Image 1 (spheres, rainbow, N blue to C red):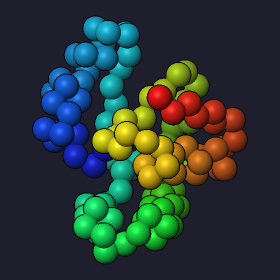
Image 2: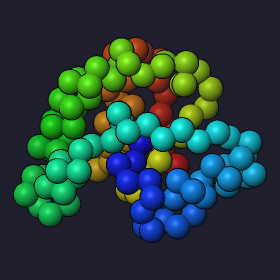
Image 3: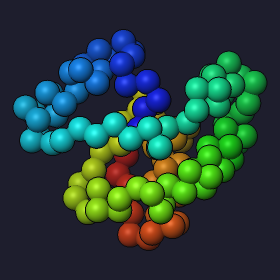
Image 4: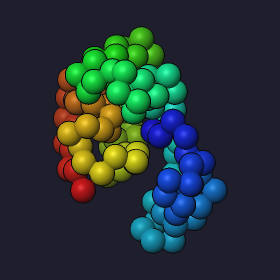
Length: 115
């Protein structure tokens, strides 16, 4: 769900390496799902302070509605334990939390555990 999954930000989490590590360490599969990522412009405005968290959260939630994520994303992906990855350490200011709250509101039954 990261916008840029080839970033050097966390070298082990790059698209070229993460599938290998996930399979080897816990038998998990990797799926890059850009529908759950903000746009580059949206992320840039937030990171550069042009938009605060409240505005970013509102804009990102609107983007998920426009993308009809709850209709176009296969709900079965969440029928097994699923991890959402991004570069934020805490859920308070992370789009992972926004995605899970949005999907829980649309589908119900989403239980989030922030690691």
